[in-house]
Length: 333
Image (cartoon, rainbow, N blue to C red):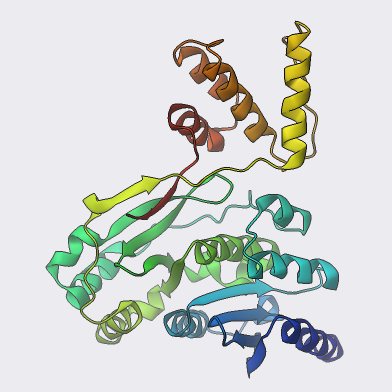
């Protein structure tokens, strides 16, 4: 195992120096790199899923400190499930600002993998949060915040708060459901993927476990330090849903052109065959929107029936797209 990590270390030095990063720390769990020009930090986990004795509170504390210190903090797992080339391409997607779910699927991440959460210790967290930021902060703390990711899938974070300059996502994690050693690489990578998408969308993501909140005085001080002393949070009523422009890929445009040509020849039934994760749903949605604009479809009754044919996770995006034209993501207006 030591030889494998040593080889990885040498490869990482070459990879990250090419991106302008330098190593700033070696941890028991892996390595930490920093690119000073844009204050982007990357945590690389190499053996964390094999460390049964690594305290989860150490995991969350270190990550929270880095999140509070740097503009962006991405975290990736490298282990034997990834080939070196695929891992490099996977990281490059985020570093280049191309958070493309289609590319991400190509390099091994399974975004359908869901972590099962027990009910978090909300009472403790909220009580400490209000002590740290005052009663007025009640109107700025969003519980079970709905977040539409880059793929248009609706996800949730336990809490979210927005200042004038920063978006905060807060996860309360049970160790049995989130410790990398317990959940192993597949689920852990899925957990990191959700976190990295939030970071790519401008969120700072903080995590606390029950053990991390046991010392309330210390926890209150951490909240104030990490989220900002005396920082006013924007009232919930001022947070709106705006929609990100949706751009079709070339193969999706081609499919729509072929469908339109066939429709002009009076063909009205189509079978679209594409690999999993390459955007069949988006093709369907755009075709329906196109028909609606041409007034082939009146009203929304028929469209809602069509939405029922889509997987549940896409229904909301489908209806929003039809009614308003573009997928949406939560942000501070």
